[in-house]
Length: 260
Ligand SMILES: O=P(O)(O)OC[C@@H](O)[C@@H](O)c1c[nH]c2ccccc12
View (cartoon, rainbow, N blue to C red):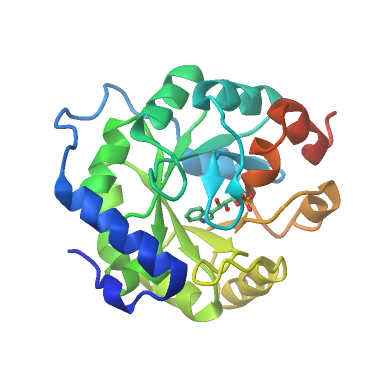
């Protein structure tokens, strides 16, 4: 159940192929999931108004170095400012994340956590659960026709899945695969270009097709007015760089959601 990564173009293909090399090299934990169910990611997104998923992000291929941050501290700052979920990047090479960051965030806050990584092997789904995540990211451009099988693996592990797409065609694949939480990434992961028109456009398309699940707008948000434009059209927004870059991530999030 490993996707054919040679067909994945650009930066995304490079990252995904490296990720698979590392996963195949092993070194993973063998212990089972922690006791008790993690808090529900889907419920946090479905709460009234636009939910914010705030991301712990140190660097990225598009931004370079963002912040030399402490995952637990930043997760706590996000929680105080009103984030409804926290996304933790665990990809080590291109994003300088780690499994330890996810565990640190788990110990620091009660909010549901999204394991943000490039899932290219089913073992990463089980790892996510063992590390205390409530949800995993599944990228349609990476998983292609295997998206449905990975959704099933997530369900079996007791995790929600944020199924990420970048255009109408991928969105249709995601719906056919049974996605219940659809994320539309404004950033094209093959070229790293951001267009804030992408999420609203793809959202309109899937609603017209009858999709009645949860919709998440992802990437590139920096200003309060940009979030205001998402109200009523999206259940949640995923914000990383503009928060993580601020020396005071709590204040940065308060400014963005208007409770400063
Ligand atoms: O930092 P930004 O522009 O606010 O974006 C956050 C998040 O959407 C972005 O980190 C992201 C979206 N999809 C991904 C897939 C892999 C790695 C990272 C991502």
